[in-house]
Structure formats: C-alpha cells, structure tokens
Image (cartoon, rainbow, N blue to C red; front, side):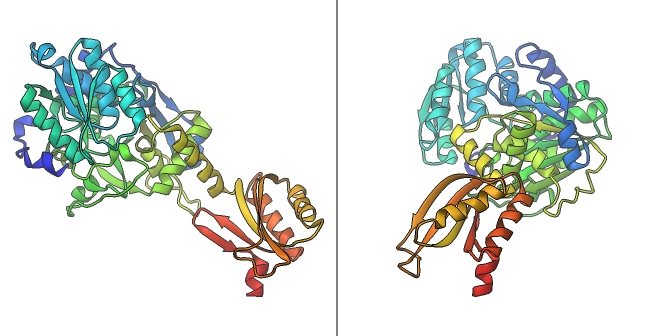
Length: 434
C-alpha cells in the first residue's frame, strides 16, 4: 500500500465521511444487495459470557460485504462511466463485488490482480464479466499497474477502502444491525484498510451515540491498532486473514477511526482458526479468516476465563465474508480438532513380534478411540532392530478420554510420544526413562 499513500494528500475536513453519506448510500443500494440477517447465537453467547448477535455478510451474493461499497460507488459515478469503464486492483472480495455490480449495470470493469492470485479467484472474477489482468508479484505492483492503466485508458479507479462513497456503502452494515438488533451496546468489526469500520462507526453512532465500536486485526497486520496507539506502522507476512492483510490503512479511513472508533484489538492466527471452526461447528456457516476475527476477539483466554471487558455486554459481530478455499478450510477444521484433542497421533515403540499391535489396539478400543491410520518405522529413529515405531492416528471423544488412553499406555509400560501441531511431546513413561 506504500505506493498508493504517496499519491494521496492528507484529506481536508470536507472529505470526512458523514452519517448523511451512509444513510444516502442505504437508500441508493436498497434492494440491490441482500439485507443479511443479524441473529442471536445462544451457544456462542454461553461460550464467551456475553450476548452475541452475528451479522451474516457471508450470505451476500459474492459472499462478502464489499459489494455494498462497490455498488454505492458505481451508482454515484458520472454519466459517461458506462463508456469509460472502471478499474481496481484487488485479489479478493473487492474485485468480485465490483465486477458483479459493474457487470449488472453494464459498466466495463477491469481488475488487476497479482500473478500469485489463486486461480479460483481469477475465474470467479472473470465469471462476473470482468477483464482480469495479472500483473506483478505483490499487491503494490498490481496497484501501481492499475493506476497506469487508469491513465492510459481513461478509466475510473475504484479504491477498495479509502474512498468516501465506498466507506458510506460499507457503513450500511451498521444501520442494518441496529435496525434488526437495537439492544446492541457494542459492535465488533474486522479491520484491514478501515473502510468497513469507518462507515459502521459513523453510521451506528449517529443512531446510538453511546454505542461502543471495537476494531479487530490480525497480529500479523496491526496497522490501525498501532496508529490508534500512536505507534509506528509495522506488519507483514503470511496470515489466515488475508482479506485484512493491509500494511497501510487509508488516509480517509484512519481519520475516521481516530475520531469514531473506541478501541482497536489484535488476535493471533490460532484464535482466528478456532473462530472459523466454531462458526462452522455451531452456526453451520462458512467464514473466511478475515470474517472470523471479530469472534476471535471474544473467545475466552487459554485458562477458560471470560474476557472481563465483554462479559454481560450485548455485542454484534460482523462476519464479513465467506470466501475461503475448501482445502484450506479442511486444514483449519482438522487442526482445530487436533488442538481440542478430538483427533491425534501417537508414536509408540513396540517389540517387532506377533501380537504386539493387537495388544496396543486393545487399549485404544477400551478408551473408545477409533484408529484412523497406522504406519510403521523400522529404520530411522529406532534404536533396536527388534523394535518398530508405530504411529497411530485416532479420533476420540474428548480430552478426558484421551487422558484415560495415555494412562493405560503408561501402566502397560509403553514408551510413546504424543504428536501435536507444534511438535512431539514425550509420554510420561518415556520421560521417566530419560
């Protein structure tokens, strides 16, 4: 994002987003985007110790809130837009939202994506009628190329977040939440560039001034969190929440956040994974990493304690999108099952003779553990030619049942290691031998 910030001067006061902008956007896009439900979650409320309502923006046609801002921008363009066309740089939800509504309105649209963009996103964007140009190895390079094409082709550039009409369109999410759940006293918003939280904060506080607005970012990309704390912007690297992986927020958006947002928070990658799995398991809804950070901020601490600042509050959480790769989603689910102890893998040292595997399997059966896969290693890492290391992947009811299995392994005298996401952990009997 560094390139784009060099091109944007500090915004004048007259450029600030207003509640009137958001209300006008709501009237403009009404009936053209889905008024998604805001629903109370009894189970999640019990888990986090607060009253939780979920705003299902993952149910939009393009599976993300981004089409609200894109549509509002398109509807405010000059009359010659249909002949000139629009252009944007995006590898995600902004591209699809803009492509879908521009195609529906008969406006030519060009999307510049980095060459590394997953083919499924390229195909989906093209499927909405957009011309997709693959250029650059990063977003910044794609962005720079889009600005060059804007000038060369006389196109209209549509920024993903640092645009007043885009921000206003995103803010309609907040108006809908308060219309459907007026008892809310807190709204938690995922934050990348800041377009959504800017619009929601301005709009929601115009309806309910004492409402608390909390923004959440991945700890890999904490730009707005750091700005709110008057610290230098930093961040980068891989994140499960790629939809909010923004190094530099916008100038319009940062001004709105400084004035209207009460608090910024960051969450870990592990917490985001847990939130994705909880939403699928409890609410039966698919949410991408960026869309799950709001719930991640509410989850109890590792010791099970509720977050005291949220206990008893009436909280709205925006599930911003559901565009997640199925294979990646499967990995998240399995990792969370492993983290919770419901699936696992144990490496056990056995004498390499008849009947040993059968005896070991009997301990798994006794504790209600279903054996999924068995593999043997007789050469590498095995001290004796008469021994074999047997790795058993299993599924089990819960951590209490797992503790019973490990106790039986100890009492039977097996040397074993429990294999976790972060590595191997020696069993009690093996630790005692060492």
